[in-house]
Amino acid sequence: MHSHLIVRLILVVWCFLLALPVVSVLAAWLAFDAAALAVLQHQFETVLGGYALQSLLLAVGVALGTAALGVATAVAVTLFKFPGRGFFEWALLLPMAMPAYVLAYAATDALQPSGLAQTALREAFGWRGPLWPDVRSVGGAIPLFVLCLYPYVYLLTRAALSERAVQMMEAARLLGAGLRRRLFEVALPLARPAVVAGVALALMEKLADYGVGAYFGLATFTTGIYRAWLSMNDPTAAAQLASVLLAVVAVLLLLERRAQARLRFAASRGGSVQASEAQPVPLHGGRAVGAVLLCTAPVLLGFILPVGWLVAMLWREMLYGEVGLPLQRFAGWAWATFRLAGIAAVAACATALILGFALRLRAGPLLQVGARLLSLGYAVPGAVVAIGILLPLGWLQQRWPDSAVAPLFTGTLLGVLYAYLVRFTAVAMQSVDAGYARVPISVDETARTLGASRWRVLVRLHLPLLRRPVLAAGLLVFVDVMKELPATLVLRPFGSDTLAVVAYNLARDERLAEAALPSLAIVAVGLLPVLLLSRAMRR
Image (tube, rainbow, N blue to C red):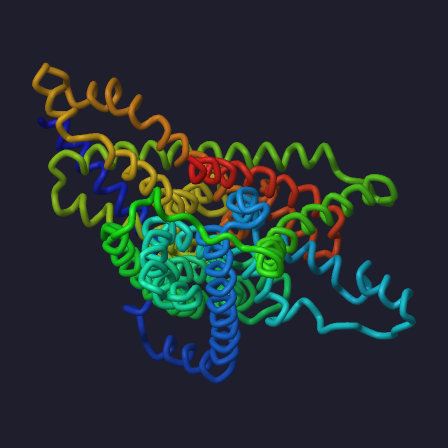
C-alpha cells in the first residue's frame, strides 16, 4: 500500500510538471506592474491590432474553407455512390500527411513569379509581369491551410453521417421527401456537431502553426510571440501574447468538447430503417462527374501535386545542383529526428499507460485534476509551450544564478524532450484511454481475486490487451514530434537540428530544392498513421 501511494504521488507531481508551462504563461499576468502596463500599451498601439486582424482573417478563412470542403467530400463519399468512391474514401485523408509549411514550400516554388507555372504561361501566351497575386500572403496561406486541415472535418463528419444519415435519408425518401430536402433537412443537421468539432480542431492546428506564418512573413500571434522573445528580447510581451493565444485555444477546445459530447448523443439515437435497407444514392452523368471532380481536387492539390513537385525539385537538384545535396549531413539530421521522436514516443506512451492504469483504480482528486491538465497539452501551441518553459527557467536563473536547473533545460535535448511531452502526451492518453474503455473492469477484479498483484495485472494482462492502442499512440506521437517546428526551433541545442528545422531554415534561405529532401522525409513518415487510419475506417 505504501509503495502504491508513492507511485500515485509521483504521477501527480509528473502531471503537474507537464502542466507547468501553461501555468507559467498564465502566471505572467500576476507580475503585472507599471512596466508591464507600458509594454502592453505599446503592443496595443503598434502590433497588437495587426496580429489580431491577420489572425482573425486566417481563422475565418480556414474555418469556412475546411467546413465547406470537409462537409462536401464527406457527404459525397458517405451518402452517394459514384465511380472511384472506394478510392476516395481513404485518399481524402492523404493531405493529413502534408504539414502546412511543407505545402507552402512547394507552392511557393511552383507559383511564384519566377516559378515554372508563371514562366511557362508567359512564354506560351506572351504575357508579362506577375500573373496572379503573391502566394506569400494571407490570401495564399488560407487555401494552403484548408488543403492540409480539411481532413479533420471530413473524418468526423463522415463518421457522424455513417452512423445514421443513410438510414434517416431512406426513411425520409419513403415519406416522399426529395433529395435536396433529405440532404439539407435530415443529413446535414445530424452532422452539425461533427462539423463544429472538426473546425475547432482545424483552427487549433492553424493557431499552432509557425512555419507558414514565418515563411510568408505574416503578422500573426504565433509569429509575434517569437519576435517579442527572440528579436525584441521582451519575455513579458511574449508571455502576454502567448496568454492571448492560449485563451483563444481554450475557447476552441471548449467548443470541440461540447460538440463531441453532442455528437456522441446524436450517434446513440436509433433510426427507423434497417442498415440493410438503406443504401447510398447512385449518381449518374454530370452529377457523378461533379462528385469525382470534387473529391479529386483536394487530393490532387493537397498531396499528389505537392509531393510530385518536391520530387521534381529534388531530382533537379541532384542532377544540376551547383552545391549538391548534403546527404551525409541529412543522415545526421534524420538520425537526430528519429532519436528524439522515438524517445518522446516511448516516454509519452509509458506515461499514458501508467496514468491510465492509475485512473482505472480509485484515483484521487489530485490525480484526476493532473490528468485533466495534462490532457490539454495537445491544444497548446508549440510557441506557448516554449515560452512557458523558458519563463520559469529565466526566473530561476535570476533568483539563483548558480542553480544547475536552468542549464539542464535551456538549449539541451532534455528541454526539447520536455516540450514534446508537454504537447504530445495527451495524444498518447487519448489512444490508451480508448483502449482501456474496451477492457471490462471485471477482468481486473477476476485477476485480483486470483491473487495477482497490481503490477502483474498491468504487465501480464493489460499490456497484451492494449498492444494495438499503445502502438498506435506511439506512432502518432512519433509523427507529431517529427513535424513539430516552433518548440524545436527555440529549445534545440546548437548543432542538433531536426528535419523540420532544417527544411524551414533551407526554405527561409530560398534553398527550396535542398529543402525538398527533409520535407519529403517528413511527408513519408506522416503517411504511416494516415494509412493505418484509412485501414481502420475501411474495417
